[in-house]
Image (cartoon, rainbow, N blue to C red; front, side, top):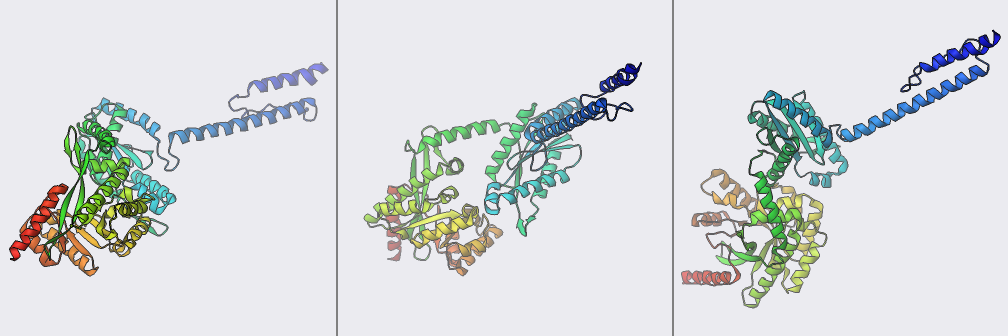
Length: 508
């Protein structure tokens, strides 16, 4: 009886208590300590066991929390808190299934921030991260509710799915709301940043019926839209696949064009409107494709800039133009040669030395070379561009701002840049004297050039009326089809001789 009371019964109670312990949460139901055994061996064993159960429970809790964190990190973007790409694809498949069951239209909008790389370079990566967080917040606030699924695809790309649509017009309205929201200025550390975005839109079921294909269509559309401009949206069209394939083939052909000597230069004369003399020429590249014929520069130059081959092509243009200028000078026809310097070339660390070495190799005075840069090419990294262009200007090379009026057109950079020439973009000359707004813009640029003591060059002059008006307004130089189209070297020589002989005859 004593054995039963002191040992057997307490042990049976402990056994029943052990059976009630939950293996998943062992610290929820601890072992009950029998009365009167607090300080004996049974009490010590129960206390030790309970301490072990509590430790196991704590370990399991930490393990579950770690698993939850890992799961969240894999399913959600750490920076913005939005669903990640993999999580988004699961949500998209569910949204497509619902839209299919209800016979409704679903839109997928792929959103890419314009020139985000440049923003990172100018403002720093910390500011870049804050911009991404602000974009996520604005999208969430503007497009809240169950009708929208918002996620971050990676880098500067976001995606928005809108459910329950009747047609694509509603998707266009949503795209306008997104563009308006993202273009609103952002302020970080007393620095105001204004940015834009470009959107590609694909619709279910018209453009694709599968989740991965729908997303791919929207991403391709956004990429193509960025080539045409910024701050607008574009819908997917059936020909996008064909356009992508053609571009890939163009890129492949471009990679061997220089090696296969498919490029050549043509020269468009620049006329002094006061003396009516040819004072220089702009060197322009042409690509004679063996199958497609003449490929317009507007088609292959952006591709070359994107894949970096413009660096090698640009050096070839510089070398050929300098060789031609040296040849003309030796024949008694010294002319200034203008060539275009792309943004990609300007970012190269050794671009200044390469240009100066090329001039030295062909024995060309630096004053015979003019480099034309667009406004956007040096605004991506203004400090670096100013430093390089000042070195070139100090060596005697002229700097011209090409397509002035189509980019930033800021007096701030004109004050800092070593610029001698402003080139009025041909789109303002085309409707000169016909379109009042274009005429005002051309006049403003000419007056600006005068006030800053810069020579203004008009591109795209096509009529005698345009030439006369520009000369009267004080524009110094002009080029365009009214004088001559771009010519091959021999034809250019013949044109120069004939042009000057005609002036002599008219004076006589």
